[in-house]
Amino acid sequence: KSGITVRHRAEPGGLQRIRLDFEMDTSLLNAAAVMNEADLWHTWVPLYRFPIRGGIRNCVKLAQLTRASQLLHLQVIAPYPFTGRDWVGQWHACDQLEHQKMITVVVDDALQSDFPDHPLPAANDHVRVSVKGGIRVLVNSSSHCTLRVQWDIDPVVPVLPDVIVSFVTQTYAHLGAVQFRDMVKNLSAEHQERMRSDPHVYGFFEERMRQAGALSGLPVQPDAADADQKEGQAPSGTPDDHPEEADDEGYVSAHSDDLVEHVAVPEERAAVPEADAPPSEPPAGRPDEARAAAEGPGGG
Image (cartoon, rainbow, N blue to C red):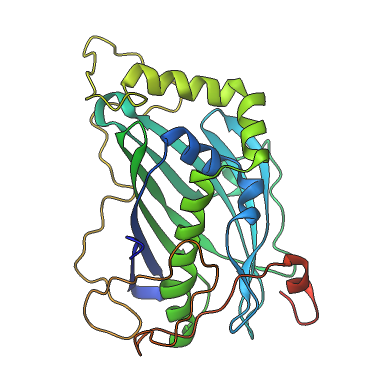
């Protein structure tokens, strides 16, 4: 079993809430690098062209606002017959290592009125969606972390067909978590080079981890007298509302009224389908090994 749990719940107004929980045998610093280097997401995020076409077309970092905050523009290939989707948003990390031994990444839509100094791109031939939520990375030891990811997504579709809901929740999100975990454990040469060449971000973060005991895995010993907030650090006692707010109640799979834990393929295999897969599992595709091929006729 992969140890990855994917949950889905449809909210009023077409909002789709997806939650993932999984553990990783890796350092927090590696996980931070894979999340932070948004323009490299295409190297690990799944891209499918069969049986349902979909995945990231590209992701551009529009601006690095602070060490812990950036503006992003994401374009997504949507399954037929839908037009491609895009999202412009802010990705902001909160340092809670000292008091809670974790970091929280808060994700929200970006509006031009909130960033007058940074021109935001138009949607053009894409449909702009809303994505809000966050990622909580809890440090269990120097080489083990627990992740909880929650997305509230408005795909701007009145009714989503069950086959697409099933694909996204049971296949795409799950394989994305598998490949994220694999990339974190086996950092690419590009990720490693960026970590070495950017001490402003990664050197600072490594020092913060050392100060908080996150490199040694020892229990955190917060200094109550230290009232200074580090850059990007959430105030002590800040509620963990991204994404801790959600609980297990009400989460359902696309084919069941009960909470379902979706377990997919072993990490060493890229393709998901198995002949003996449970009947409730939708047919899963294979990631596109030649990503450019997905940009062929009828794309987007």
